[in-house]
Image (cartoon, rainbow, N blue to C red):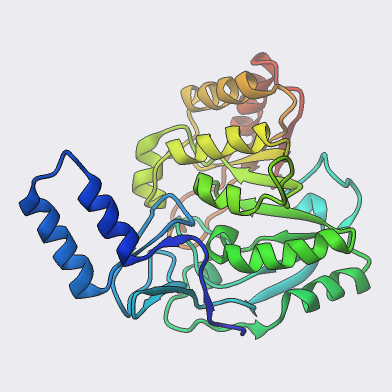
Length: 320
């Protein structure tokens, strides 16, 4: 049913209560208080992203699209596609996977980040109206095939928040010979990546472009409303599972444009795999950061040189 679909990745009240009762570090008073709240507000816990929101009845998580209805968690935008386009795969950006092909790109409203520089803020930060054209996974796959696309990209907003629709579509896409691509902020949980496994050895996801927005915890807390560590863990786990990974860093003047940032990011990438492509993109004034100036190209060139010095083999400057 488009628009309302019970989520797969969450803990119900009984699971939360069991965990509380088994916690040996809490007093009986603390346990009783927590259990009382869970029952009173019919709380459940989402496990799709690393916020792991505890959601009261008739409320949604931070993303705005995963909502608690009488103790059950529902994806409120299942099959409600707000953006649907045929793109060159390089636009994602993905440069080292299916190069020169088209990808069928889809997204919904909502996001689990609050980035003040988001270029798709009109859909990612939408909360009041969960709009979108109703499409089934089969219709998405059929459209991709008819458009002569070689892949489907789950993009425009954060695909983790509509992961159940991603999985249902990805299964059909795989059967039809299409590849599956996530364009993501990387804030998904291990449970989410596990959920997207076809089997123990193979993921339904063939490629990911993951935003490594900064190597600074304060940047993630202040600008994104999140934390750095889960993103780093997603990058490492995706590579371990043999998913093709490319990384993107949007360089914002006065926020993440210093040499130490570049060195830390380059070192992190090089320790995993020097062949991982690193896209360093130029910032232009957007959304809540209209007062800032575009990134100087010389700053991108500095980041490029630092990446090369760290041994990175595939560095691309974008938006220039």
